[in-house]
Length: 475
Image (tube, rainbow, N blue to C red):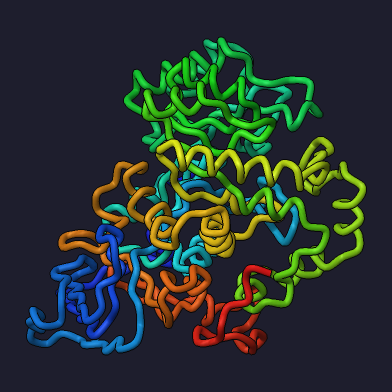
């Protein structure tokens, strides 16, 4: 296993805290959004001991433990750590995607960045090297100070088709090869099985056929694993549901969803794990309007900024098909993306209105999608599409934890991990206030926020922006 080469020194460098003595921190005078209650609760307090919530409730009931560190959060709001249910890590150097960049150092940098944006847990869907599973295992034995990882290992990609990461995912061609892949991933201890069913809007001649998808889903269930599918087309989604798929990693975007699909999803408990609305938005913009926003610029490399500001990118968006560095084919990625975005939003609204289970995920990590940043944009887009701020927050916290099947995260309740975000102002008044990050805790460990971050540069190189400034998004 690749991860066997990753020693303890590297694990410690990757953000693990192992305190020798019990430690208690008390947060007082805060307004609590716990992920469970229907409304915020002013005048609250939280007691964190050894990384878990030992007590949470009204200030009137607080009994401060002897020797505890007390932080007065008067005027501030505390919500659960954000969970992004669809990411990819370690793929990129600036705007070039390549397997050679998938190193422990790059993975660690991405997970630190997610944490800085208040994203305390991520589900990586199908592009991980094996050492990520070792990292995940170490996290579950300790108190991490970078974003928690849930991993689908290496997902299923059809030979000659769309998806995966060249050099990491090994394409398959037959149902038998699909079953073998699932068995190999299950033996490694993955959390989910990912499969790609797409032809990049008919620009790639091969798409994973139903006999292969059926074998993968069936074998995943035999191994007590859930299967998550990348989809684009309505009819593919229906066929996958008939085969027993558990969730979708993208919204259906080729046409409006119909009652048949919605009824099928509800009847079989199929999740829209991640609508990735922010992904569709990013691909529809000739010039991204956040390129001078410090909430964005602090989290990307100088090379990324230069590329995003270039005339070459603007030309690619306007003219259509382009070849991204690291991809073996042209992507018709910007073509008709405004229509695709509108269709995705309308279909997401239909699923929410029908009562389908929906999470919050961004597909951040690859080119044009930005770790941590897009989670805030995704929640804003949910609100713009009609959800309340509280519902958007719950989709990114409690609901995503329910999808993951992890009862130790997602809400701020006694006995759960102290994964939380401290905000200057309430996101219930304005969902954009999730950007006003005063502090982030993972397992009770205080970690640097985006306002204390300057990706791949000295901190002194990022001089603008602060947690107290009003947010600029949406633009």
